[in-house]
Amino acid sequence: MKNSLIAICILLSCLSCKKEKHQTFADELRQSPEQITFETKTLDLIASLRRDFMPISEPGGSPLYANSTIIEVDSQDIPESIHLIKHFIIHGDEIWETEFTKINTLYSWAIRGSSQNGPKWGPDIEVDVVCEFELNGKTHRILEKSTQIKATF
Image 1: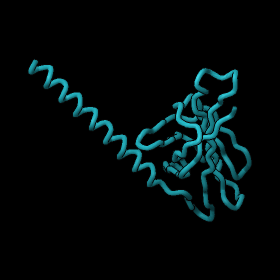
Image 2 (image 1 turned 90 degrees about the vertical axis):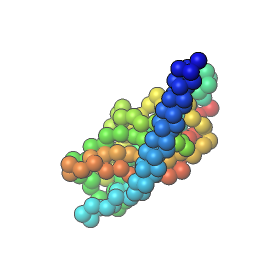
Image 3 (image 1 turned 90 degrees about the horizontal axis):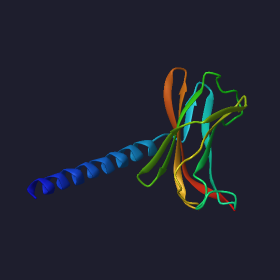
C-alpha cells in the first residue's frame, strides 16, 4: 500500500511538471514578435485555421487544418533562402507543434506553409499561431495573436 501511494505521488508530481513545462513553452512562444525586420524588409504573418463539418467529413468534424503565410509588408521580394520549419498553434497552455506538410511560394513577397491533422479544437475559438522559419542561417519565430478557428458547414 505504501509503495502504491509513493508511486501515485510521483506520477502526480510528473504530470504537474509536464503541465508547467507546457505553460512555460506556450508563454515563450507568445513572446515571439508580430513582425520581423531585416535589412529594409518587414515580415508579417497571416494565419488561416479551419475545420470541416460538411456531411462528408468524419463524425465530429475534421481535424484542424492550418495555413501560415509570411509576407513582406511592402511587397518587396523576400529572400529565396527563407525556409519554413514548424507551426505552433497555441490554445491556452496546449500546443500543437507540427512541421509543414506543404510549402508554396505564392509571390516573390509571400511564402505559405500548410499543416493538417491537428487537434479538434473549436471552431469559433481564438488561438495564437507561431511560424518558425530559417532566414540567412538563423532561426526566427513570428506570431499572429488571436486567430479564429473557422468552420465549413
